[in-house]
Image (cartoon, rainbow, N blue to C red; front, side):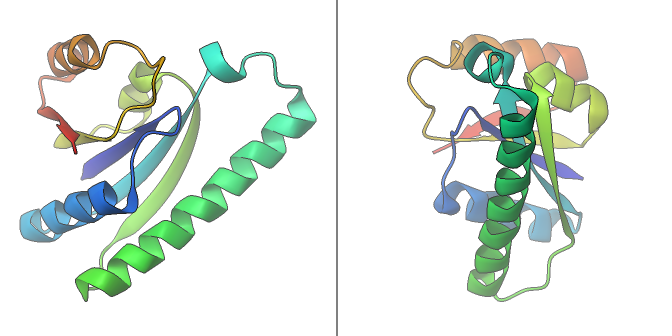
Length: 130
């Protein structure tokens, strides 16, 4: 399984397509994971957070449908919206590799430090797609 990470709104349809092509090449499923960071969303009330997670889930599924049509292949996919940080996703979704969707949103943690930390934590490749 390959996990495509969107951190605090990072990523684009183009980088998700790159991740989809890698999953097709590797003949493995792709999980599109959106991270709702506590640093940005920690003060959001429970009702609003529930709506945010539901909306993100819908948007990610729609984006995956568009990408699947564009690459012209059926692709085994799933969506995961996780509140916390990238480490929380890694704990919940063990994968063969992790692809972070660029461009990175300003104010997001130092990306090179995050990639290094996640690579060490998982022992798996972690890469920024741009």
